[in-house]
Image (cartoon, rainbow, N blue to C red; front, side, top):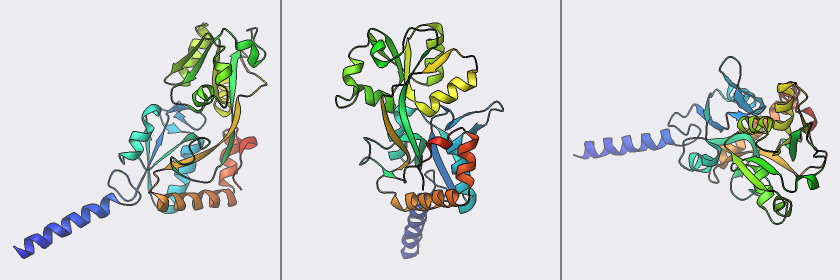
Length: 261
């Protein structure tokens, strides 16, 4: 009986060890990154059907340094907190805004300066934020842009002038609706806006000169997972020091937005 009890204790301890540390799904060598699969240039599916992007390539480089296996886990952005808190993912790494969420996650150092902007059709008679009065503006559900437009201390007064603030699950759909004329403008991150416009290469869209706000991106971990956060954060700085970070930033057109030192 004593041996049986000891065996059970050992089994239980082993299970706990497997569930601890890096590897939200039970494999301690896995690094499971939760990301928005339709958020280029940070995370998206390329023409070969592979998930890639600035954030995912950074994660891959860190996994190579640590001997981990990167697991790219697409998530529904509105469900990101449930994924993190349930242990399905190790972190949220997808152009993730720190501002306004400082106390909600264990954050890496900020690595990209970002702004929330408005995209409109080049042919539209919309040249300033004031011109959005009476217009339908699209925005991604649970996004930083939505938070800015709903916050009374930021751009809530502007949003109150809209005819409608319409939420979309992803920005690809929002751009399709803008092109079809179903919405008049889209509120979004400047890096994503630039990528979307350049990838279409048709001159149909522009970014208004007036920005909604400015913010910074970081990698979000569960509040009690500071050990993994510290490891990843240190490796992020190593990638900056050896030039990998800047090379990837240039590849994805983000060099002007880098703030990691």
